[in-house]
Image 1 (tube, rainbow over the protein chains, first blue to last red):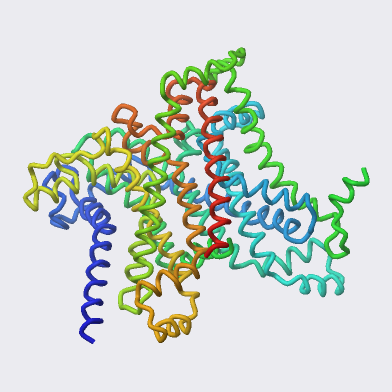
Image 2 (image 1 turned 90 degrees about the vertical axis):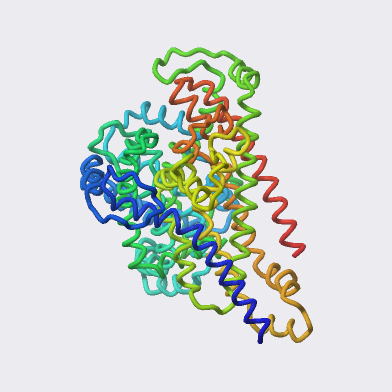
Amino acid sequence: MNKSFGRKIAIYAVLTFFTAVIALPLIIVLSSSFRTPSNMQSHLKLFTEIDLQSYRIAFNTMNFPMKFINSIITTGGSVFVIVVIGTMVAYPISRIKNKFMRWLYYFFVAGLVIPAQMVIVPVTQMFNTLNIPETRFTPMIMFITCSLPFSTFLYTGFLKKIPVELEESAYIDGASLWVRLKDVVFPLLKPAHVAVIITQGLWIWNDYFFPMVFLTKSKFYTLPLGMIQFLGSKDNPAQWNILFAACILVVLPLIVAFSLMQKKFISGITAGSVKG
Amino acid sequence: MKKIKKWFDSKSLIFPNKMYWFIIPALLMFTVFWILPIFQLFRYSLTNYNGITNNFRFVGLSNYKFLLRQGTILNSSKNTLIYTIVLVLGNNILALGLAILLNIKIKAKGLFRTIAYLPALFSPIVVGFIWSYVYMPDSGLIASLLNAFGFGAINFNILGNYDWAIYGVAIVEIWKRFGTTMIIYLAGLQTIDTSLIEASRIDGCNEWQIVRFIKLPLISASITINIVLSVIYGLKAFHYIFVMTNGGPGTATNTLMYQIYNIAFSEQMMGKASALAVVAFLVIITITIIMLIFMNKREVEL
């Protein structure tokens, strides 16, 4: 009894320590974001001032509403296309059993290890060759492409667990191939859709690299790209409170989404790993 | 011809060859924007292409020779490997340890899991800003804490230290990935049948033996996936260097990916950037293959 009590205390001590390490930077960011920009006292004095001036400046400098809408369009559009063409490509891969299909599977999945920065030079060149104009949709092409290895991998794993008998009976009932994919298989893949939407949506919403490379007009900028303009003010201590407010503004939509769908987030993360 | 037909034919009524049409959109995008560019890398790496004019010429292997002579290849490969090793070890040991602790029935488990996961929601650029502040000399979080506890004499500046900067950056990525990794380990641990644990306890196993001989082998799939993911993320090291150090001090945190980006977009030397990308490609492929062979072997042993 005594021994297990001591062990519990030790466990809680370790957990408290790690919680502090993880949360302390976040708490300080939150506390400092509520200070006026000129408040330069030690950041360790938490929540000594509650003021929205830093937020107002950050909101206006980065033109939050427009970037927010661009982020929504980019993320929503890319994820929608990924779900559709990811299901489409994984369906034959999981159902047709021959060498070509196995090879095609490895062909896609091998893309998981290739970093975007590695191919960015020829990719921009490819965009020039194909004369793809700069619009808010340009980075979406790369988001969708880069997401294909993971989504193919995940959808194929899930599809292999769906019994073929369901489709056989639909076939006997006269359902065409397209109808079977759309009305039988697609709804059954719901856990996979959740995993793809959460993991890929999170990455696309947060990514600044592709927008940074492909977009020059600030009216197309997404939220993370809006953060880049603060890069220069990192060395100026007078800017930190505004910078922190900008950080909170960019993260806020995801915190809201996460608190509304915590269960889905957790199952989304684990689905990808368990199927592997 | 017959052989090709045999290769492709689905041999099924329900899943006819018509299904191949479903592949087209994904295959087209993936080939045009991902596979062809990889092949292009090899071509550009032999030219003096600068990204603006199209009348570049072939210069043979001089790009590679230049990068080798400058020590760029060796330095950035070394930094990438250090970053990867620190990330793989730090992330997995911490996450696995805490997942095992959390798996014992205790209160506040959900709360800790939520807090640990929070950094995963943050954009790398936001994380980079937050940690720029944490590491800032004099007035940053760590420096202020040292001051408050009376260690003000220590001049804390990890990102300005030639030897330690790369570890400082890797710690940031551990901070961000820790929660996700732990959740994957927790999910693995929860699949273990409790009767197995009880049986081993009756047989007289102590806590360490239960972890080592029952739990770890049973979650080997989670261990594999987490190590593979950490290696992949480690080899892709870019974001925190871009936001926090710009490769500095000197070249101490120049990883392969940051160096490629820097040569291509700051110095406008696309040929040299492509040459380094080819080297990075070979490094990544080699490590991936070694990792796959090693993982296959280990899973059988366990």
